[in-house]
Length: 230
Image (tube, rainbow, N blue to C red; front, side):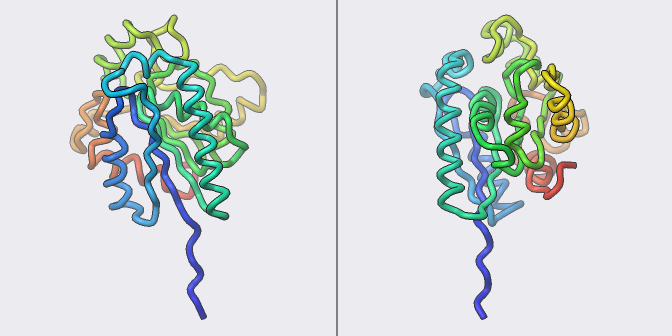
């Protein structure tokens, strides 16, 4: 009798602006510790090294890269029948992740984690909610006053330049277009504010605390890989 091979598992990670891989490297290490059977696959999307504003403000480019990511995920799913996928984005990478999820069929991915997203509080997340079988999970921090405060006043949010009110600072405040969307948000949107106690895990409320090793391994990854929404 041969042991049945477990279905493949993959976490796709979309780093923030500027062409750095700090977030994906952190979650590569964290996933190895928390869920070693999950492959971590960084998605390369930036305009280039330190091109922060281009990454944040080029909406058409983010949409294009999102569709490329959706194709990559669907190709992975086709190559791994029964395989499970998770999706994680940080800051401007959340624009790309949202476009990707919105381009995929319902329930394609297990869960989606959005870490201090630099899109607006009113961004359209309905497609991502449909694609995420166990919900979209958002970490935000009102203490992120530098990147999602001062910088947003210069650049505006990537999906809406007219506002600097970022979901990564205040959480998503979506406007549902139908009763179905109201139900979808109730069942699948979960948001987690930063609290002072998180400082003990290396997250001081700033923009990059979400991928400090203790915070990612104690807070984010256990929620992301949990087999239930809550």
